[in-house]
Amino acid sequence: MSPTLHPMLNIAVKAARAAGAIINRASLDLEVLRVGSKGPNDFVSEVDQAAERAIIDILLDAYPTHGILAEESGRERGRKDSDFTWIIDPLDGTTNFLHGFPVYAVSIALAHRGIVQQAVVYDPTRNDLFVASRGRGAFLNDRRLRVSRRTRLSDALIGTGFPFRRGDNFKRYVKMFEEVMQSCAGLRRPGAAALDLCHVAAGHYDGFFEMGLNPWDMAAGSLMITEAGGLIGNFTGEPDYLYQREVVAGNPRIYGQLVQILSPYTRVIRDVEPGAAAAPATADAAPDPTAAFVAAAAPLKKAPVRIRRAAAPATPPADDAPF
Image (cartoon, rainbow, N blue to C red; front, side, top):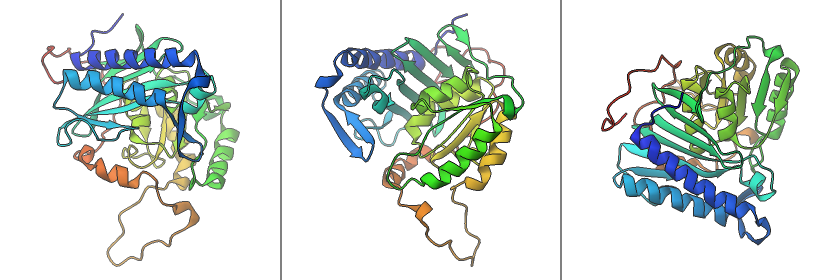
């Protein structure tokens, strides 16, 4: 049964489809695109920028007092002091797109005081629309999403993402990869984290883990997972993954087994006890290229990101209710 979408989610769907149309048109002639680089192996095209402008124009036309946190333009537009913030990745999987590999998506989430409430991930190559509203469930097109029921990691298909930026510790990742690969039925790396998280919600994957992700890579997909009955957190299983650049997700049983494997590899910074010496710097603690940007996004952290198992859908609120 098709869900009745919240008005804010309807606007997000409109924006995602507009961006998808731009992406699909550009995919017909990739050779004429202007492509820049944000860093080694980290590309941005004029399509990313055009899709992002279209998304923000639609969102701010409907909600001019809302804030914006977008991959390409940051917080240049929107109200920086708003309790509502749209978290946008206009083209997740840019490298795939530029090579004509059809695994990429538009990702849009709405956070209210740091808690994601509405989410859209749109796959323009398949016309697949993933949507979720907090307390109302997650859907792929007209089908309600549920995480898989597999209980043994040895039977599980796991998604991941390889490190590719300067400063990423590839040797550390290889150790994690080896442990997980030898414990599960298969490991996949398509290259678009927003879609990977949606596939966990849909039960196509049983779990997922990755390092080095940004809030716009995870925000929408995280709500898909929790609304589909799954769990998501950092490598130690805590819910502060959104700004920690490490994430693990899955159905509850597989999630727990992945956390057991991945927890020794966490980079989450803990509070230092009074009088304790700070840990010495290592190659693994290379400067975070998004640290300054995350600091600028601090208003999103007014409240912690609280992750829970999805409850049965509540009675839908009235259309004029915020959620």
